[in-house]
Amino acid sequence: MMTRRPDRTSMWAAGVVTLGLLGGACDAGGPPTDEATVACDDGIRVAKDLPRDLVDLGVTRAVGEADIWFIAPDEPTWGGSVVRSGDGFYVKRPLWTSSAKPPSVTVVASGSGATGEATLSPTSEGLPGPLPMGVHFPSRGCWTVTATSEKGRAEIVVKV
Image 1 (cartoon, rainbow, N blue to C red):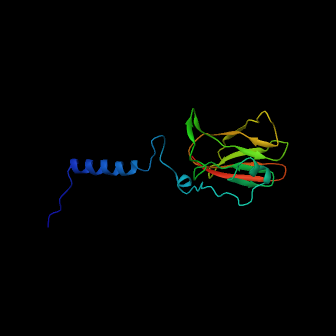
Image 2 (cartoon, rainbow, N blue to C red):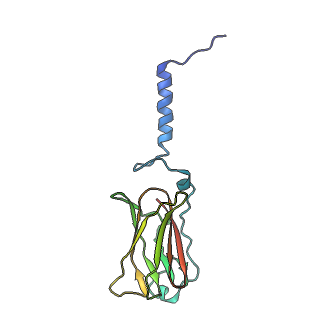
Image 3 (cartoon, one colour):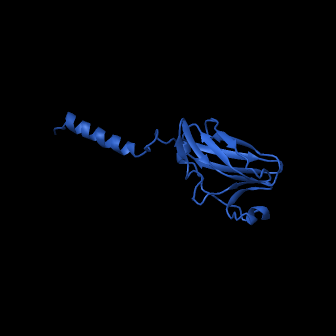
């Protein structure tokens, strides 16, 4: 019985098919996704009971506790509106607080411990109230954004 050895053309074609299949694991803007990103669950699970002051503003979707809340977007995930920006990625996420003091906010990547940055921009009405926030992520991945206030803590996971 004779075994046929593949010629260079068929080996090349197999390589192209393999690369094409692997290419599906990459997105248009960056490197292949890693395990942390693939396993990242950034689905929005809104709280059932929101503070009266937040409801009076017309907010029906938020995540948090006590005096600090992330106002949820209409999208099904926290990362749905992340955009590429300069040297990384960016998203606007409003907070709401019933405290007169701004919360502290951390942005940390799952697995690597890399950090991002949150910029708070108080409105002319000041606090307590809505607090616009921009979040910068230096790379793709699964990021935890945590806002800590005087009485509570709000945390979201953002897939970038």
